[in-house]
Length: 484
Image (spheres, rainbow, N blue to C red):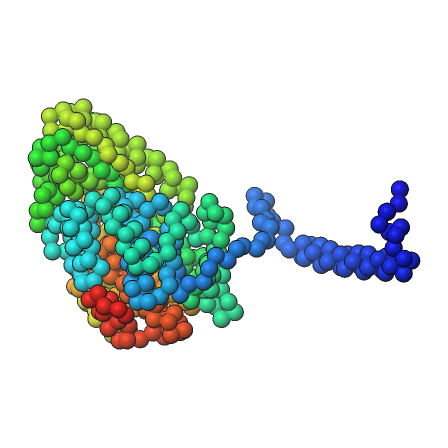
């Protein structure tokens, strides 16, 4: 059977088409040869490995600043950068903003006696009836109110937020500058570009993906601080919980006696918490925070191990609540409201920066020329093993701290350009990290990172070229509610 289209073409056209077909065949053969050569040159995957086929990824948009991680440091960094005039994108893996504050049900902010967003949060939560002061530097809050508040603030500031999105890769240019992050979500694989990136993932995920050096725990094999799953419980009679609640009704200090009372109640129910200092904290009215869990020796970036720890922790919480409820009396009708979606991580990656905070900084109370905030929280190291927990649930490693500065250099990655950090993944040693990791400090770090990132993007320079003496007045204007 002949090609009917060719029968109506002049002989010259037939010849030209034959030549064209021959040329295309030659090109195809050449391309095939190149691909085959490339494939043959590529190393074969080792046993137990699969080679992923290369692919193009849609570029969603360009921004001035992209913040990866919507926890305390990330939300603050995004808000501050936006208030400083930057176009900001905030990427978060969970279904809400706030990280450990909300998905983690922390409900307790420490070392929050600082100006700026720390103070703004206290005011706004108070207006919603969701602020229970403990002392000048700490307070309790309702996680549900915190979720809504953070969303409203980001919408008002113009921060573009995408939830359910995890950063999985980072790209750099020839000058070793981070230019693009790749994410995975239900929308598939997406690429995002910006002038400056901020790693507020808590576990230093972006820094590690970008090729930065990092540390975790006391060594990469751990030992690291344990994970803890928080839970919320509802009491029928809140006053009946007073003898067992370490914090009740906004009392000015942590109460030790209730811990022993709580431990005895657990023993009466035939239970022993994995956390050596089992605690109940009143959040508001009949709502209490329950902290009874420790999961030891878990690397925060080992998904399988974190999954197993999450299952164990949640099962322990349910056992405790059921056991207490069976005791009756003050525990009668005790209801488990929620367990955290995100198990609390104290000890993730610490990304190497242009300055490494050490325990000597804490002991000496060092001031820094580029100090972005003053931290004062004590060293708080939770027992790194079950055996150590039997002796003490936490300790200070014998370090007595004086108020110390966290320098801007500790918030700027050393190994790559265009990347900043805020929160517990900044640059520091194991001892220093055990002090600065609390969320009141994370907020202040987020403010500094946000304003520096915005200025760097606006002036088209790298973050380490921004002078803190120039950035600090801008931050003060933002804190005062003025345009940057």
